[in-house]
Length: 88
Image 1: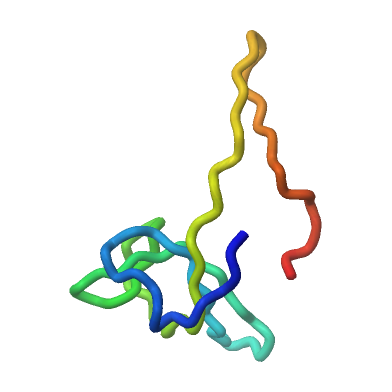
Image 2: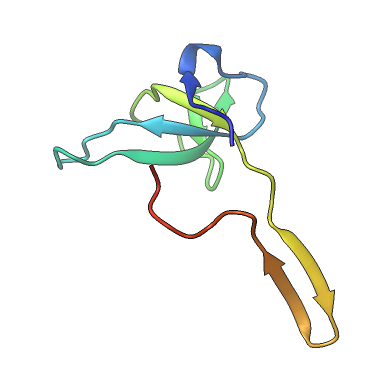
């Protein structure tokens, strides 16, 4: 996975990226990673709902590749190359 980059270098062409928001949301240790895109009308907006983000992201990175999916007669199975564990 790529390293985090300053938000000033993020693409502003409506593609979805991951953004790091050091938003406190009432809690001193809360930090969020949100899928966002640039919206000319409101700035950063969530990829899920299109709602304007109320805090300025500080870093961004491209979305990771989707998981590999294999089809078997009994359904789909997802294989991930990422080991489970805490997010650094």
